[in-house]
Image 1 (tube, protein in one colour):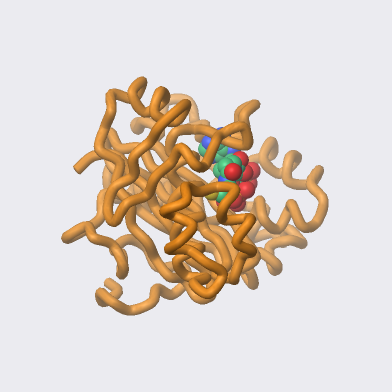
Image 2 (image 1 turned 90 degrees about the horizontal axis):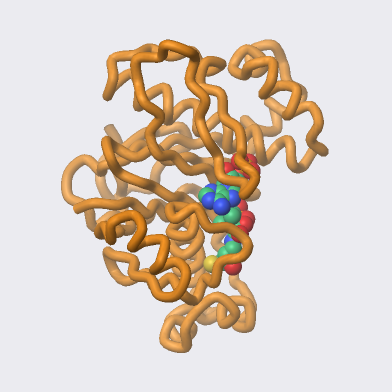
Length: 247
Ligand SMILES: CC(C)(COP(=O)(O)OP(=O)(O)OC[C@H]1O[C@@H](n2cnc3c(N)ncnc32)[C@H](O)[C@@H]1OP(=O)(O)O)[C@@H](O)C(=O)NCCC(=O)NCCS
C-alpha cells in the first residue's frame, strides 16, 4: 500500500495522497501509462486476450491516436473493475468478460456475462497524453474521473468554464490550480453523465465537495441530492480528480 503524501506510481490501486477523505477511499483507481498504451496499439496477443470479439472489432475501426486513448482508458477500467469484483464480490473475472462499450451520449457502460453473480458498479474513464485512468465506485456510489496534463492554459480558456471567483485562483501562473479546477469540473460532469452540451460553469468544486447549479443541479436532484465529494491525485505530469457520491 502506498504511503500518504507520496506521488502515486502508475498501476497502483486505491488509497489517495491528496484527498481529504480519511482512511480507505470509497472508490478504486487504476491506471495505464502512455508507454503501455503505445505498446498495446499493435494489439499483440496478450492485449487481444483482454478484449471480447465485439470490443476488438470496435477497437480495430479507430484511427491510431483514438485507438491509443481508447486502449489506455479501457485497460485501466478493466483493471479497476476486475479488482472491484475480486475484492467486493469474490468473483475473479477475466478482463475479456468485462466488456465495455459507450452509449449514444458517449457514457461508458459495462456488459457482464449472462449469469454473472455481480451487479455492474458505477465507473468512469479518462485519458490524456500521459495515459489513462479509471475509477470504480463502491457499493451504491457514483463516480466520475478526469486526468489532464498539468500545463499552463490561457486565461480565456479557464474563463470559459469557470466563474469569476474561480478564474482569480486559477491563472496561467498556477497550472496546478488550473488543472485541479478543470479536472474537478470534468469529473463531476462525468459523474452526472453529462458531456459536451454541459455548462462547466454550473459545476463548483470547493475544498472537499462539489455543488451544482442549472442543468447539472437538476440531474443531481434526480439522483436524490447526494453529497458529492472530491479528491485529487498527482500522477507523474498529470492531475487526476475523482468525484464521488456519499459521505
Ligand atoms: C465528456 C467529457 C466530460 C470527456 O472529457 P475529456 O476530457 O474530453 O476526455 P476524457 O479522456 O477525460 O474522457 C473521455 C471518456 O469520458 C467518458 N464519457 C464520454 N461522455 C461521457 C458522458 N456523457 N458521461 C460520462 N462519461 C463520459 C468516455 O468513457 C470517454 O472515453 P472513451 O470514449 O474512450 O470511452 C468532455 O468531453 C466534455 O464533454 N466536456 C464538456 C464540459 C466542458 O466544457 N469541459 C471543459 C473543462 S471543465
